[in-house]
Amino acid sequence: MEQSTIAAIATAPGESGIGIVRMSGPQALTTLRRVFRDNRGRKRERFTARHLYLGYIVDEKEQMLDQVLVSYMPGPTSYTGEDIVEVNSHGGALILREILSLLLRQPEVRLAEPGEFTQRAFLNGKLDLMQAEAVIDLIQAKSKTALQQAGRLLRGELSQRVLGIREQIVELLATAAASIDFPEHDIPEITSQRMLEGIGKALQAMEVLLSTSFAGRVLREGLQVAIVGRPNVGKSSLLNALVGKERAIVTDIAGTTRDVIEEYFSISGIPIRLLDTAGMRETEDPVERIGVALAEQTMRDADLVLVVIDQSQPLQEEDGATLDVVAGQRRFIVLNKSDLPSGLTAEDRDKLATEQVFQVSAVTLEGLDELRSAMADLVVQGVLQPESPFVANARQEQLLREAASSLQAARETVAAGWPLDMVQVDLQAAADRLGEMVGLKASADLAREIFSRFCIGK
Ligand code: GDP
Image (tube, rainbow, N blue to C red; front, top):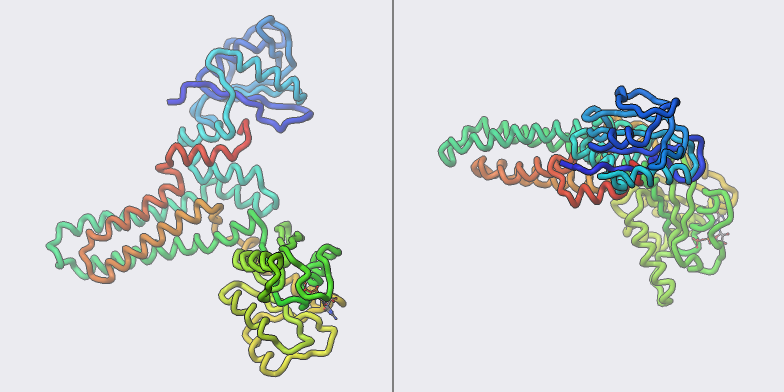
């Protein structure tokens, strides 16, 4: 298959205690023999697998580059599935570069592309695509939970689930194929029934996984919280109060927060991204209109919307309009200015009765702890008590959605009493999408795109 031997510096650039240069491929061991001298300056022919050897790296003129520890991990039981050699040298940027360039001067050794070691591991069947993606997540994890989740994915927990569902679908495909033997329109009732049950079960399993994609996204990107409401209800003040510092411009001239202002704080290590949007009112001012459009987009993308209402006044038409825009989104109603006498009517209160309501004052800070802890609960429910490995990224989520919709189409076909062989296309499509998730049939382009997100040396 892949005949070249690749080499790269695997440790982060800069000065450090040690640095690692690694090589993978058929020439790794030959190259090591050529550049390594033991403590007594002798060449070594034999390297026992996974042993450390102390010695020196020498260049073509037998000049010593550094004292090193080297190890040899023969394929196929190595990370990449190929012969791997690792050179632990001192961690100076120059030392590492010199060792790397010596290796690159050897025949058939070339510089590795970003992620190429892991790509080879994937191509050699050491990791599936989701496990490979977990390697990036592991390296980039920003919280302990994200780290644990990536660990689960790397161990293949999500892959096993997905392959399990795929297996169920493949069985259904066999049933559908067998039904061709029955005369048309004469399918035994029992077969259709079994088919419907099987499809239902697979769909349910997919939905469980899909429900984790929210948690997966929160883990990766944090919880996106949009603060919305008509001008002057106290959105900027609330943002400042939640974050605990002066950032947004607070004025009492309607419409001063013109663009979307963002601030972060964190709950249990999960970043909460707070977005303060411009007032949601109709406006003629072009600058403000941009703000309004931006606000609407921000609101739609948010995981949670805080609808701020000034409770010192009766509900206004614009408050109602804001509530309509965010209908169907996860939302908390924040009744601000609780330090002032309430101006809400009994009718207003009725209207909000079914909502999750928080009474707060951005000035006295009353009620803010309750609001914060409700946000924390949301994060905790979604993220910190995972019963299932999470769907880890948009690629996986998209494929899972496509598989689910093919399966729904198959269910409709069976329910409508069509011959069972007609569901084969949809079942096959569902099985294929799940296969792509795991990378059973990954195209070269897809693999390249995924692995290019890695750093060099991984
Ligand atoms: P925004 O336009 O919704 O961002 O509103 P601002 O945060 O700019 O606040 C508008 C006005 O309401 C300012 O004068 C704030 O001082 C005042 N305000 C905000 N929150 C409160 C509150 O909880 N109580 C009182 N009394 N005034 C508040």
